[in-house]
Length: 395
Ligand SMILES: *Cc1c(COP(=O)(O)O)cnc(C)c1O
Image (cartoon, rainbow, N blue to C red; front, side, top):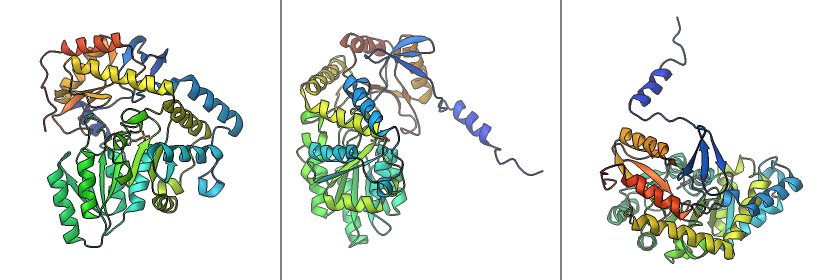
């Protein structure tokens, strides 16, 4: 009898469960606007979303989406090269370029698509990509897809980055070299030393891509990101990010020189071969950017910053972004801590291998301007009640 094409799958899933690494989807229903969720029939405080400013449910974004839906419908119909760009796509890109201080911008259907498309458009086989060890999966996938030679440096390790740049110059003279990092790291919440990285890449004549997924709408003047805060926006060749986190909508973007955007329009396959972002979603992102630029945006950024200070003062620091990891060590420990928190009314995800290395599982607390201070402080008390913690994430 022929072997079933599905054989081994049950065992594979059982194996994951045995190692406390099985993931399951759960359905939640947001209640009100302060991050409260209904989960399994109970209300809990959500500290898991990347909706850092609470914009995803903001009336201004909802209304912008509804107006765009009424005018243009729900879908875009085809890729923009095939059916043209709508005014909302063009306006969104103009606004993004202005926000990030670049000549041009290009939007994609997601941040993942932006990362994969951008890297594989800018470099190819024979070129070199040098990545921070903790770079997001989308950046790694883009680098792999590009067919370029890959080198990884230990997290934020400048000497190792310099050594890889030297290696690239010696071994692949004439190749295009792209350095890739995040500005705020998605699972650790710490920051990259961008000014030093810029210095190294300029000395080496390399390009630099910085993924600002967790810094846009969080850090820098008016939420422009860490590139702006570090004063290096003009030297970062590709400022990548997502419209799906602090900006409250969905989609990815790359802000860059016109030349690089023109290259992506022609070569980024996740742009060329994918339907344009839905008009309501693009309109919501545009409204998110507009809101961020105004007084209300400033007030939300301030409120988020207050929560960061509250966590830091409670001993969960240094808090360098809206992401606060609490080290747990083994996956099983992280899972049971997450369950204990859930019983106490807090939804905080356990982050496990392969998202983070084995033995470095953690709870990942994300703060949002939509939270009430009293709930942030209550979460801190509950986290302390978990007993002695490993202390650091263990490098
Ligand atoms: C979330 C994230 C992305 C992907 O963005 P989506 O819009 O969710 O696809 C890319 N890079 C980093 C660092 C992220 O955290």
